[in-house]
Image (cartoon, rainbow, N blue to C red; front, side):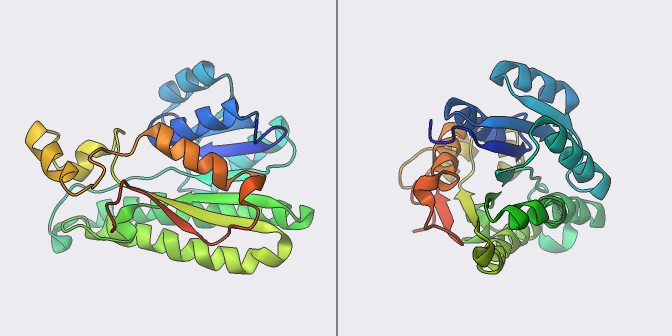
Length: 246
């Protein structure tokens, strides 16, 4: 019960890593709200986890504002913010990625963190406490060819995490990031281009521990970084990647 009495919002919480993080937080005693743009999946996951839910688009101020209102109504104050929602573009030469795909990646992976900061950081600063966890990627540390603009967006997340951490430390707010390798999530097919046994084997050969990241891996790491046990940890970009970045 490391998160007993804490409140948490996990964006993109209806599936994949977000669902794994939310499930772990619930098991550790937190009061959790998940948000997602997929309303049907959101409703089902919230019922499975026994947590709160709010449908919304993290890439718009209106959507994040609705999440902030829902959090205030359900919990009052927010202790933990997990910026997990993310998208990618399909593998292709960098000059061939459409402007629409580029904008979507930047809006969901980058702009969302700016927007949640605007809505939730003032309350954390006023209370002198809070934790922000941004879900980055090994792509931001060891870029893969043909995913250039996704790589760049996750590199931004890592730098933003460190910038936020150093600015917010005097206010008692910690900010960290997790850098998972590709996992068994809805984004896997997009990363691989095609989800075939051959493509999986090729990718797994680059991971020393020989497997993908799982939602449980991310949940375990997130629970530590968002707990008081990590009270001296801020500005970290923790690799949860089976050695992929070595």
